[in-house]
Image (cartoon, rainbow, N blue to C red; front, top):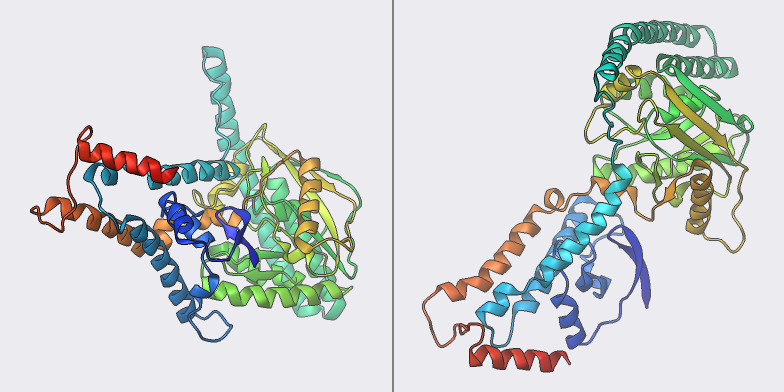
Length: 456
């Protein structure tokens, strides 16, 4: 039996049949505990993770599964070190696990390139350029920024007052029409506050049944950029602070759907609820066009990471949208781990302009012989080609995963395994203790020859 599951950032296929002991020992001897691609788990029968209970993944059951996975890691390393007569130098100098972890770190580095911000290259390196640079800093921060901020605040006040009046006066379709118009007006105010130079290519989206729009994701400003052209109902993470208040109070009028990524158990329930509401929204011809960012996270507009298949498993026609930002004045990428969205907005408002091209591509339908994931990959390639992005096979959610933070007990258990290995050498010699050896000694040479013979 073969199963396909994610080990690390790529999707890989692994056999679930039990390997023989020699192969299993070889697998565990070359695998590091810190790597996502731990071969012991790749060749382990997944039924070993069964802890009983219902099919629903409640908090207690998930905790038991996580503990079982951690124990499998530790057992793999302990099995590698157990058995046979050992020598000090081979045990201390065995760096196969460390090398495997280092290789995993190199892979992680290629993954993190998708989320690196553009570094500002200094150009004020001579006297006359420095003077021009100082003039530009003054104009952007002390003239343009205050004007833009005042316009944004004035527009937001007008929007809130008008939105409240519409809710009191209008009802039914008329109310929905004006609320959509006001949201589009507010998005245009945001684009104006950035001195946005946005060029839209392709037909304007119109509400229709069984259609869904998908786009690459660079920042939360993608939504105002698109809604300034046509109002969309979007699927977004629910943010804290004033952004969350705007989402709940105003964007709900468009039928936007929210999920919570910070709480894993709430996320599992939100995913099922959002999936059901997505299908109902898509079937309704009167609802606003549904916009989905299938990458699920912000990427630096140089790469396009793996598309989640949820938007491509609805039985609806998919309309791709390619968003490409010109970084000549400002990098539109929002690194949410380094700055708040408010700081991100102020950075854009203090720049000269936001330059962007938006391409509405031809609608795509799922082919008869095509799975949902294959359909997602085909649409991803279309968007990446038009926006001149590099396709990356990584799952973007993994940028929120930190082994040390998620599994601190696993790190401590790993240290204990190595401590148990070295501790016998620090105790007084005894018949049961492993014998010491030095390089060049007959014992070490004999054992080395035996090791070479066994490897052959």
